[in-house]
Every structure is written in C-alpha cells, then in structure tokens.
Amino acid sequence: MLELICVGLALTLLVLAADVYCYGRGFILYYGDAEAHLNISRSVIDSRTPGYDQLGSVWLPVLHVLCLPFVGSDVLWSSGLAGTIPVSLCFVIAGLFLYSAGKLTYASSLAATVVLACFALNPNLLYLAAIPMTELVFLAGLALLLYAGITFQRDNGQRAFWFGVFSCWWVSLTRYEGWFLIPFAAAWFGFSARRKRLWTSIAFVSFASLAPIYWLAHNWFITGNPFDFFNGPYSPHAIQGNRNYPGYHDWKTAFAYYTEAAKLCAGPCLLIFGAVGLLLSRFRHTLLAVAFLLLPLLFYVWSIHSSSVPVFVPTLWPNSYYNTRYGIVAVVWAAFACGAIVMAVPARWRRFALVLPVLALSPWLIHPSKDNVICWKESQVNSISRRAWTNSATALVRMEYRSGQGIIASFGDPIGIFCQSKIHLRQVLHVGNGPEWLATTSRPDLVHRELWALAQQGDALSKSLEQRGSPYEIVRSIEVRGAPALLIFKRGHE
Image 1 (cartoon, one colour):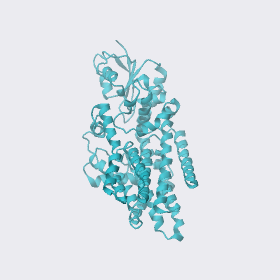
Image 2 (cartoon, helix red, strand yellow):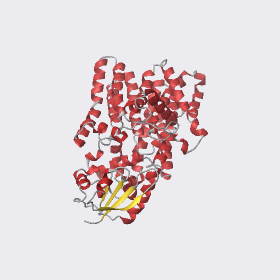
Image 3 (cartoon, rainbow, N blue to C red):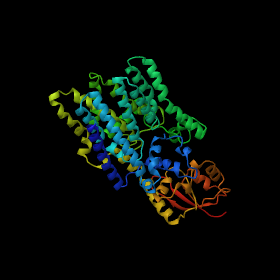
Image 4 (tube, helix red, strand yellow):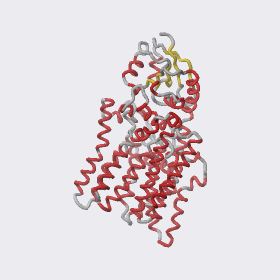
C-alpha cells in the first residue's frame, strides 16, 4: 500500500507541474476540440434547454460527465481548468493501474517502475493530461482493463470479471476504439477462465456490450437515428465527405502514416523497445497482455483505411497536423512491453534497465523545446486562426454585448468566444436548442428575438442570416489568414 501511495503522489506532483505549466502559458484550450468538450459539458447545466440531451450524439459522454462537477464555475470554465482537473485525475489513475499491472505481470517493482517512467514522463502524454481531451480518459480505462485482465488470468475471481466489464464500459463510452476492444477482451477473459470458457466469453461480451447498446439508444432518442454518430451531419464521414487522403483504402499507406504518428508521439526509441518487448514477452507468458495493448493501434490503422479518419503528420505529405495525437496510445503499449526487456536482463545487471526511460525520452532531452512536442505543436498550429478571431471577437462582445440581448451562434468554434467572455450559454441560441433554433435559422425574417448573431462565413447559419428579408446585418467581419471570416451580425430593421 505504501508503494502505491508513493507512486500516486509522484504521479500527482508530475501532472500538477504539467497543469501549472500549461495554465500559465494559456495552452489548455489550444485544441478546438478541448474547448468544444468543455462547452458540451457546460451546456448540460447552462443552456436555453439544459439537460441530458445537451450531451449530443457524436462525441461519447464520459469526459463531459466528468467535467460536470467543475464546469459550473465561471472561472474554471473560462480557464479550461474544469477539464484539466478530471483529465489529470485520469492520468494518475492510468499510471497507478499501469504500474500495478506491470508488477503483477513481471513480479518486479523495478520492471513496474520502468513501465511507469516510460509512460508518465512522455511530454506528449503530459500535455494531453493537462487539457480537456479524451485521450487520457481512454488510457485510464485501458489501464483498468489491462489490470482486470491480468488479475483474472491469475485468480479467475468474480471481482476481476466485473472490474473488466466496468472497464469496457469506461473505454466504450469514452472513445469508439473501446467498442473494438470488447470482443477481444471477452476472448481474453474466456481464454483465461479455468472452466466454462465459452460461457465466460459470452457473459463478458453480453455485459460489456451494454455500453455501445446504450449509446445507440441515446442516438436514437436524441436524433431519431441510432447511427447518427456514424453517418449523421456531424460524423467523421460527413466532415471528411468525398475528399481523399493518404491511406484511404490503402493499407500500406495507412500503416505508414499511423506508424509515423506513433513515432512522433512516443519517440523512436520507445517504439523499438516496444517491438523488442513484444518478442521477449513470448518467453515470459506475458504475450496476451502486451498483444492486447496493440489493439488500439490496429484500430487506428483500420480507421485511416476504412472510416474517413485521416491522420496527417508534418514529416509526410501534405506535411500538416491532423489527428497526430492518435499516436499516443502507442506509449502505453511500448511502455508496458519494456517490462519484458527488464526481466530478460540478467539479475545482477537488471538495475541498469533504468536507462530505458532515459533513452525513451532522448528525442526531448536532445531537443528540449515545446515545438518538439508533437501534440502541443498540433494544437498550436491548428489554432492560430481560431485564437486570433476569438480574441478579436471577445474584445468586441465584451464592449458591445449587454446581458439579456441574446445571441445566435454556431455551436462550434464561435462558442469559445462566450467561454472566454464568461457569457452564460443560456443567453446563446445554438443548434442544441432544438425547435427554437430551427425556427430562428429557418425563418429569421419571422423569428428574430436575439439582437446579435455570430457565424463563420459560408456555414449554414451565415447563409440563413444573409438571405433576403433577414433583419440581421453584418456589423463586423473578422478575417484571419487560413480560416473563414467570423461574421458578427446585429438585428437592424424589423
């Protein structure tokens, strides 16, 4: 117990340092998705139509629910700390259970320490641990599932079985790769059972699948389409459209692009250690656990190939940043596989295995710059234009807007203006407000209670407000390089 307390304390201090660093430099809400996650959570309690249906239909709900105890505070909401707190807690949970899984698997505190150090000291992972994104929430659930599987291998206990089911619920309601893991987790638990293997697998997959079934029912309740998350207007298919990208229906290229993203996130040395550890695990009866952690990586390759989910990296054409952070799951797999390397070293030399985390960190030790942290760089590059017009619009809104005047806005990036301005979302009419939104945007010439409106040039809202007969006039156009102009409307004639 004392050992775990020390590990938990070390993880807490480490992530607190990352939080302070990111908060002090304003990095917490660089990702547009981070701000969107925070605002979805806020809209559950602060909206024209607050409540359950504000959770939406595409993004899974665990992160949004975790933020609820904190997002009601205007200070925590506008700063992003309402998302930092629960995500940082997930980092600590992930580290504790990864350490515990490593110690169970390798029967060595030294091996578990190497596993933990390779995981927790990764700069990309520390950045994602400080911001409201789903990656660390998923990794916490993955570490729980890993620990449950290893424990069930040992004792076949009901507690481990139900812990595994709970872990599947956690990952399946955090990211869609969790759905992919369910049949493999069921096979792992069934294979590990000492009797009734088939029934164990069937029971596990039946209970674990309740989470995806719930989300299908949720989508049906919210939109009338149980697959709205997959083929609805805000799904990856709709966003990507018919545009081609490297790796689409090309397995070799999909593998190459994801491998490059994994290398940039984990570092080349750690990936090599992961491959070596995977080979060595064959001889230490740890193959099931190490191979299981490879599954999320395979899911991403499949997604690039078949699911309209591109991954762009700066080192390959078109030399840009998009979903590069998906490579972060490779850190968990490779870090855990390092334990097999430690145990393969003769006992008298084993303490020198502590050099493995140092070598894993070598890309950032040799070039200690935040520009070398690919997840931060992705968020910084892709947010330049959004941050520019958000700051300009925030200054104008603070000066001109008066409480109660009402604002119509697209729920995407423009909502960040209200977050930064601390304007409550109950004063904003957006797509999550159902009939009132539909009435106002369909016939702004007839229904126009809001005095102000914010839209991005070319989106559905801007087209609606610019149609003939609309009482809204453009009073300001904020143009920044590389992004559609932000249009600020004011109701003029009646």
